[in-house]
Length: 282
Ligand SMILES: [Zn+2]
Image 1 (tube, rainbow, N blue to C red):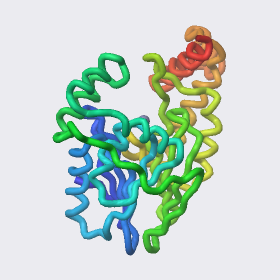
Image 2 (tube, rainbow, N blue to C red):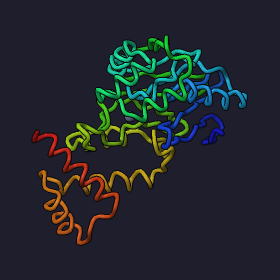
Image 3 (cartoon, rainbow, N blue to C red):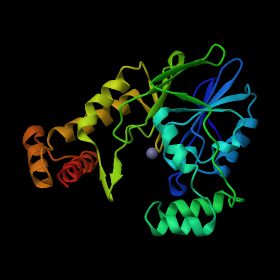
């Protein structure tokens, strides 16, 4: 079932156990726009089935928030213009060379190009994939694109992000709602989960310039302004105490500066910033 955020904005909640991110629907008087295409044909179909139950204008656009497979592999299912920024477009071009038959999937897992969970989900939720070919996006933008769905403006912009260098957000000004995709998360490099320290403050600045009250996240569904502020606060407090590859030094520095031990979130972030130093030093 879709969650109703307002008269014109809906979302399908993320399902972490099967790597399904949050999908969004914004409706104007004339057209509707979808945020992220789902992790498979089945995910896209499930979303379209829910949309059909609503009496909303036809879906004309699908915006992909970034080039991770769980956000775009369902895109062939939509009879709509797919919008991506130029960096995401390059990633999708690479995926157009991939084959999805069982032996190719096994090969990708064997060579660590893709995870085991990826293969299982694709095998379950992408039937008829032996000749599957990902289609090309239709609208490529560089930094910013504004679309009017009929009394409903969507601002689509690239932002700096600790997750990928191709992150797109979708802001709906009259609703004060923003879809952030995965942009506020860290990333995994050589099996280490890390937050790119140098990008943290530029990213927060990029996101805080939008006058938003509701934030939709790829794998969290929804946060209000207060929850988002706490998230920024915990991240920045953690970042400030990490100056090297030493977790012990960072924890001691946290305690000295804040007169308490870090909470679970802060400790998780401290480890991720320490990992960032480890990756830099390699
Ligand atoms: Zn992602």
